[in-house]
Structures are given as structure tokens and as C-alpha cells.
Amino acid sequence: MKQPGILYFCVLIAGLVMGSADYAPGQESGEGKTILRLSTVSEFKPFVWTDGAAAKGIDTDIVREMCRRMDLDCRFEFHPWKRVLSRIKNGLSDGGFTGFRTPERTAYAHFLDHPLHFSTYSLFVKSGRTFDFSTIGDLYGKTIGIQRGFKINSEFQAAVERGWINVEEVNSMEQNIKKLLAGRNIDAVAANYHKLRVKVNQLSVQCQLVCLPVPITPPRPSYLMISKKWDIPRKKERIEQMSLTLKSMYDDGTIDKINSSYLD
Image (tube, rainbow, N blue to C red; front, side):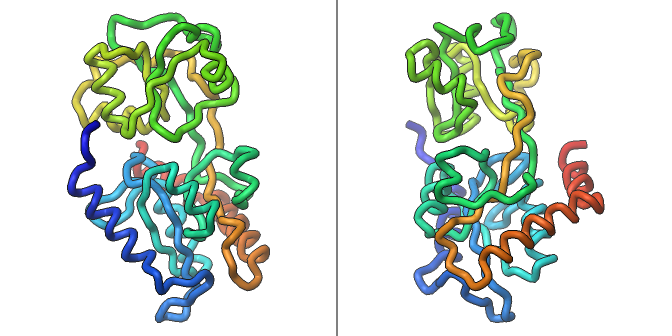
């Protein structure tokens, strides 16, 4: 397995420093603001990524503006996705983003009323190796590359559990793309459409990949999650205010403006 680069470790260490042992839930910063410590991934363009120790992206900008309007001191930590979920579940982070609402996650996290973005998952294949796809049944017998820890949908997962679809899990989008182009045991990659398009452009392999016309999932809302173990006064009121603040950002065009700055 390819070892993570030096940048990843620098980013991870920066996140750990921000989440040092002297932090307590509900703690106030030196400016008297309540600290909201959120975990996310370090590479999920265009929604979130790191540039040095700085967090960038659509979702990051939305959360940062929400915190500004609520006078919260929002601090970001960067971890692999499975660890993000684990930290939310165990109260090691106050919350995290962005995730689909599932029964498993609602057991340990509050979901705001409004999403940060909508995700569409599509199938990408190597040029010249397209196949007809309209239902999950068309994937039976095929091997699909996915990113470790990410869920496509319940129908896809059920087919995987029954052995009708094979999956190859990797740690990064780039690994999946390289495996697909090298013809290494996968027929297609299932991924967030916008994220994969960004990575394809970065790798300059636009002409070598084809997106199948029918998405594997329709647009699906992805949310900021708040840990049920977040121990803070007036917690219910604070979470309701987060939802209202996000709604106001949709209503006044702020979220459209943030999206257009990355996607247009």
C-alpha cells in the first residue's frame, strides 16, 4: 500500500494540535466564543480540502460562515472518513462533515435540517470499455472501485453483501483512477461526480475516462453532523440555531454564491 505523503502527516498533526488534551466540550476561546471542534477529511474537492494547514472548499466555507454568524469559534481537524465518524460517535469531536443521513449515524449524531451540499454518485469507466447501466442489476458480476468508508446506497450494499457485486476499496480517489486506467481488476469506479471530475482534471486524464450517463444515485443531501455527546449548555437550542442559520444562508443567496465560486 502506498504510504501517505508528508503533507498528510503535517495536516494531521495540525489537526491533533488543535484538538489537544486541554480541550473540553463547550470551552470558550480567549475571545469568549464557544469552541466548535469539527472533524472532516483532508481531500474531498471541491467540498473540502487542505492547503497547507488551511481548510478550503464549499462545505468548509459554508460552515465557517455559519459559525461567524453564530459567533462560534469553529476549528477544523482532518482525519480519514472512518475516523471522522468514530470521533463524532465517541464525542472526541463536537461534530463533523459531511455525511449522508443513515439510521446508524442518527443513533449517535444530530443532523441539521438543511444539507451543506447534494452529492451525486456516478460510475466512471476507462474509455473504450463502457457498458450499459440503468439499474444495480447491470453491475452483477462486475468489480467496482470505491473509496474506503464511503457508502453508495442500500441497494448497492445489499448486492455486495450477497456477493453479486465485487468491490475494491482503496484509501484515495487517485488510487482508484490509476487502478482503473491500468486495467487492474476493476470495471468501473463509483464516486462523487464533482470530486472525481476535479481529480481527473488534476491528473490530466480527462480523455481516458468516461462517465456513464445514468448516475448510480440521484442527488443526495449531505449534512453537518453534531455529536450527541457534545456537552454544552442549551445544546438543543444551539443546534436549532445552526439549522436556522443555514436556512438564512440559502435564502439570502450566500450558499449559491459559495457554490458558484468553486463550480462555475
